[in-house]
Image 1 (cartoon, rainbow over the protein chains, first blue to last red):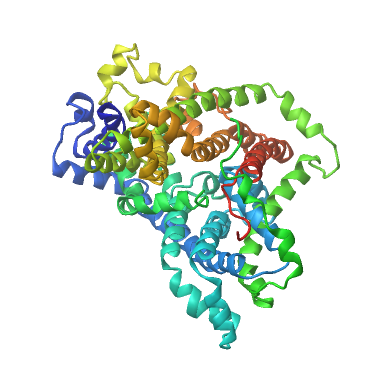
Image 2 (image 1 turned 180 degrees about the vertical axis):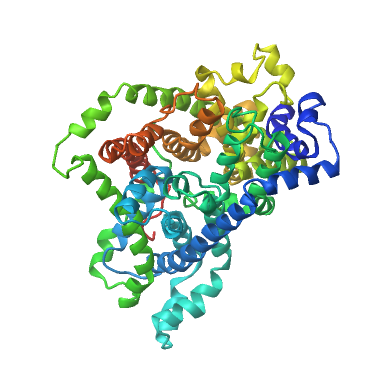
Amino acid sequence: MALFALFFVLPVIWLLLAPSKTADQVVHDWPLSFGSFSQIGHAWSHLISFQNHALLTWMRNSAIYSGGSLVLTLATSVPAGYALALTRFRGRTTLLVVTLISMIMPSATLVLPIFLEMNQFHLIGTIWSVILPFSFYPFGVYLVYIYFATSLPREIIAAARIDGCSEWQVFTRIALPLARPVVGLVAFFSFVGNWNNFFLPYLVLPNSDQFPVQVGLNQLLSSTPSFNPVAGAGLNITIPELALAIIVAILPVLVLFLFSQRSLVSGMLAGATKG
Amino acid sequence: MTLVAMDSATNAVPSRPSRRGAKPRWEGGIASYLFVAGYTVLLAAFGIFPTGYALYLAFTNDRGQFVGFNQFSKVAGDYRFLPAFENIAVYLALWLVMLVVMTVLTAVALRSWVRPGLSSLLRFLYYLPGALAGVASVLVWLFMLDPSVSPAGPLLRAIGQDSFAATLNPSHLPVILFLIAFWTGAGGWIVVMYGALNNISEDVLEAARMDGAGRWKTAWHIQIPMIRKWITYMSILAFAAGTQLFVEPQLLQTASLGRVSPTWSPNQLAYVYAFQQGDFNGAAAISIFLLVLGLVCAGVLVARSDLFKLEEQ
């Protein structure tokens, strides 16, 4: 068990320590030693000067893409999950089955077809080519559906209708206030998934100043002398800078992770009804 | 992977016929359509349309003429096609076996053999690397596999991996990809399996103890069978995701200075078709192969297991 824990933890500790050392120290000192705080500052200034603040631009892009699609995801999946759970309409079962299937299929499956589609409609290189596909989130719809189906008694809805509430009022006054836990859950999974997504933006965004940070990291990697002696020569991007870039890039997700172990379990276990 | 006898498959018979006659008590009228409209548009635009368009491209050529299965036979006959699927198969075999064995054993151990405080700390530690999924995990592991900087350097040297070039030998790729996937993914599944084990009632475990079952017997005969559907769920999701590998081999290819094949995985091959050969029809044909794989997994999971709730019971 302890060995197993080491396997998971050691890389994280190494990653957190690496930016405090010089490239030379990273190689020659004990791998888990701490360098100095001033060295972190040096690594940061090297990193920031890479392509004129590229890292900050990438972080901002990631925030726009993940944030924008999060808003659209919530705006579409919460009402859809609600309607699937608590109303009846023609095509409901079909919509549910298609949702289930697309939720289980890995998102990478559709990336190339989506690229071909974007290419056909000349959307390549626009922010919509990332935000719109990111906003399509069947798993979110399913989570909301399961939540409402299991925790909002239909009698309450029926009573509200008898009292003269319109469908819209039933949704906004009764369902939405109760939906807070599941909204958090959908937001967590959607944000983390989109923040870490690489494949789609890699295909549809050709310019470096549009990259989200994950694609940017790939570019940093190709600019590191240790991994690319030719293109990386003369640049200040060495192992400590790259490690620092990784930390910065995952920071938002890491913060969410620190507080969301419980969400993960309830989200995944909600993938199935208690049997 | 077998999907036999899901425990409550028998009582999950849909109650559709009884509903048809009676008017449902809960309706939404026209408003229902408005509620699902936004999502349906996204589903059509980024789920259904791209699938249909990829199918169209896969059955036509670059002048839009129908060519039957020519695109499929062309890509399947490509000398890089079979190796890409073989690579994935080797990786998947390793990944699935280890994932199932290790997550289940660890979850059982954490549930039954470890003090609750320590167990919760360990689960958190296992789970944390999940935050580094994607590009970050590959970069971290590039360092972990470089004997000159890795904290496991002595271990790497002890097994004969003296340099980064040696560790990143193309033949090691399935193992490397497995390590990365396990590091970022296993913790989350351990947490989920642990949650599922927690749902087993204490009475059942107590009864097993009364009957004289030890820890191993209880784990093997009671706990593991009772979380079987979770193991199936995990396996199918992991299998489906594993067939779609792109980022990890792509980055390793960059870092290996081209020694690793740029068409290591099927998705990479599709990428090369689209971006280097400009052959969108061929790329679409490969996507269709992968789509079918994903669809089969999803279909099996939805149709054969009772994991998903489609109708009110």
